[in-house]
Length: 125
Image (cartoon, rainbow, N blue to C red; front, side, top):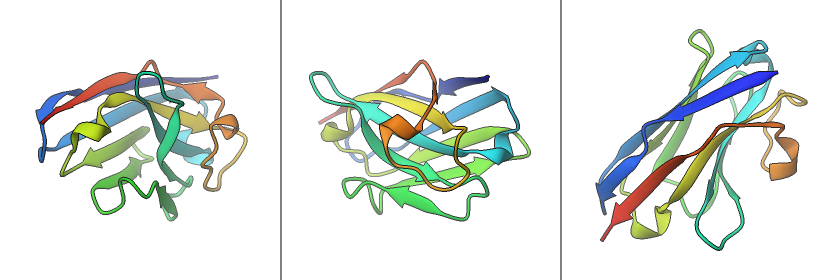
């Protein structure tokens, strides 16, 4: 079992920044891949970024490349998503997720078996 708790969402103006955190507990954090997903009203959940167990490999959706940075601190069992140059279209509920079946990079929703409760990110124009 893995428990995930996100924090750091909120309301920000376009061009601003937010940093999301995801604290994990349960299984050994450094043994599995992690990711960030988002879901806007009426849309499917989509992968935003993903990171391998060591942090050595990362993935970004085209829509966030160059603006978002995913990282993890295995000593503190925490994953981060630094979001810069935010745009109104980034508005969504953001979820962190754990892929305990895999240590390598995963980008499909179906590869993730534990999810946080979600944190709202709202970007005003």
